[in-house]
Length: 164
Image (cartoon, rainbow, N blue to C red; front, top):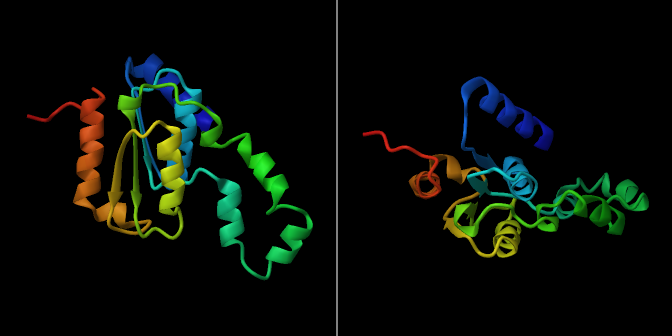
């Protein structure tokens, strides 16, 4: 996903003269957006929506009970998983864009990408702009509060143009 994003950015520069880039990802896309913030130098804004940041934890929490013994036997849910996933965790990289251009939002009753995941990213990123909306994992899709937060984030980062 990181390679794909870099290629899309290069294409947008070469073919369309793009000079600024904002990345907004939701759920696993929030994970990718957060990872991009630590790996790509020329992003103007990153918005991590309902992000996960610890894939090993997510796997441990969501693996079906009937598959758990085999995965535990191979240490795919234990310390080995933690070590493997640490290398690709957004928490392993310092963001490369200023605090004022990093944003996080999460649903306070999300049981999939729990608020604790977003909170860990928010703290790691130095407590940037954040929105804790009243909703679950998919609640962002119809939340006016989230849409306003995203619009404000893009505007304050200088990548949104008001349609007047």
